[in-house]
Length: 497
Image (cartoon, rainbow, N blue to C red; front, side, top):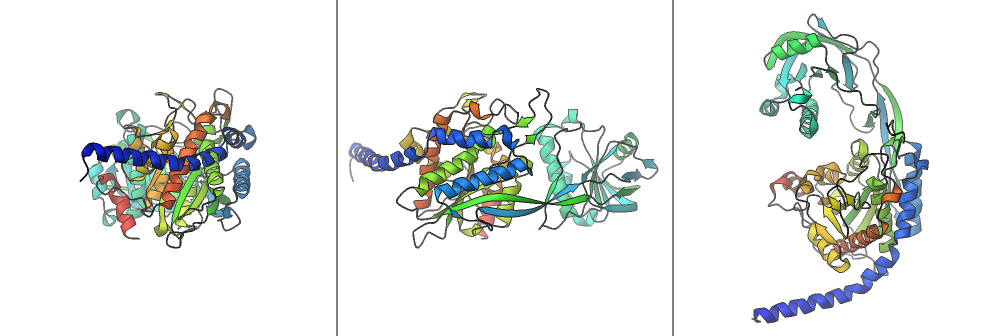
């Protein structure tokens, strides 16, 4: 056995030789990833002409055409069902308030105290009711379909000032809404003490036209008499009955598109396995704003990620050596309205989910003026400890001088806030790469192309390209960290594939 000092010296020498061997590759990729090219892409995607790229909108369609043109320029093979476009069938579902009514025994909701949250036609006449408190998580977990099926589920909502607002309240509400389909109530009614503030930015909901239509209408009610009666009742079946009318919604077909291109792998054993690189190309569109600028340009969120997908694709296609695994580049629609494009891809995969070894999602890579201070020559990974992906990018960063950082506060909490979470739900090891989690103008009209640091963005993208290429050339596919309890559900899905 070699002495420790000699062993360390040999390891250091090997690392130096390896770095020298990689230098030409770094230089070739860096020569292709140019700050001005990134600026050109971001400035067009985030221009006022595209009006914030809302889902759906003419601006979103123009962005898709632009991305397809850049994939074509890069030499990617089209991977959609219509050239570079993966077409998605959605429906715009607008509630119909005509005749909307809700009665709890003798208490009829007053005019303007009922709103439709999930538009499903329904007529109920003295239906049995079951009460649950949103704050009682144990009772929520214990609910069974046998208790609720065919009844009206009355959900007593906490006051906003008593823990009902903020992220915790939002997550709890999402939880009970998800249970609606499982429990099969005749209707779900959120009973509130006061009306929720009107949201001037609210948009007509979109539904996957190929999925089963929701069967449970969901209402919000803030009529005082109904609220007081529900609040006075004990949880469980109640004596009062519910009558209600909800008209059928107005449904309009909507065509949306992911943009997909592929760089085919060359290794006989690995070419039919896939690394997918994603970024969302939509943003918030045109909305009323007190400052007067109504266009939410979304330069950092996420024209920077979209431009980075284009840049990485262009750099890797120009290399003489083809990757061993196939690399798929996809820009997705609808992240800002529920991750619709990513959900469409995993529900209608272009390449087999079981053979897709990783999703590397790119978002918010251009701004370095984080609210915590400047973030230069570094980027974060969400779910840093969920997989072994971080080590691959740390290795790439050692060649470019870019640090790979775990943000102790935001790494895990932001894992579920971008499209990577959808790929994780499908069992695919995934992460989102970001330079800044929270920056000035986040989700505001001021997120404009002039505020990005394009020199730093280029340096980050070179690192991303090196990491993606290393992943595509490695015989070992990325793995979930089974020792982390937060990955258990993803591991379970993966192992069943």
